[in-house]
Image (cartoon, rainbow, N blue to C red; front, side, top):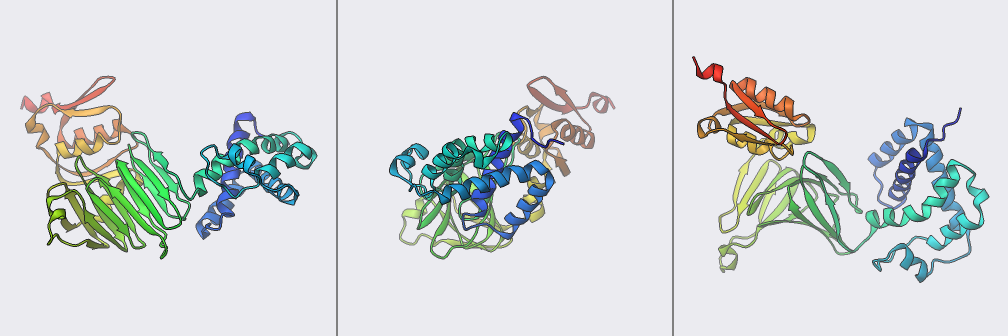
Length: 352
């Protein structure tokens, strides 16, 4: 039986095998990484083939006498960033010893390794230089940073990551993100989000942007929050940085005082499980939340309908299902076009 996948399949396996090798041997792999890697290997025999070829390529390259040269670095990293990877050795290994990598599937992976390894390595391990990560409407994505911290991006979210030897700085440019931070005494972890500057002290927290402000909610540990861009910032007696602990939330808008309050963890975190929780929220608020997750926007016919109260759970994987559940609960009708949905009173209800 031939386990060699087709061209499209082995191209994807090349990327994945290389990512695993870089992650596991970069000095920052966690127990969870190794368990996930084991699951991936056991999922399909071709995964073992792909990873074995990557490991063999590395080993052959490391045995070569040729040293890594500046010219190789320029080719591997056109941005001028330095990477500690023997691209010269890899190049020579593949071109001078093709027999070492076998034929067919193995040879294909070895050949494309030269093109794939530089961007993979740079994306995960570059100590300096801005990296941008983003999600589309309705998409969620987990980013693993070079230090082992993770950022879960919610729908329509964009972040810019800058990391060096002394600091880790994330700018939340749009949307919402959940941070799980690996504490490092020698490097600060700071998130900039509109009107807030958030400094982590080894914890898990959610940050969401508003039009001119931000909200930060701590689910574990402690964070320090400093309002930015307010009149108070320029006063001698301006309040000091606020510390938030587990279960506390800070909401801030420019030129307004920082509000610290408790929050419902289940409601806040529900988007990570594919649904939203509402409790005595008006329909206008519900619709605003749903519109964050679906390209087809929802509107409300009139103010009376917008003021209706809703408590319940709506899933965010299927817009039609969410609309069906909402309209049935509130006895509403939904008028749909290819690009829009309008919620209004049900005519049958109005006639009685």
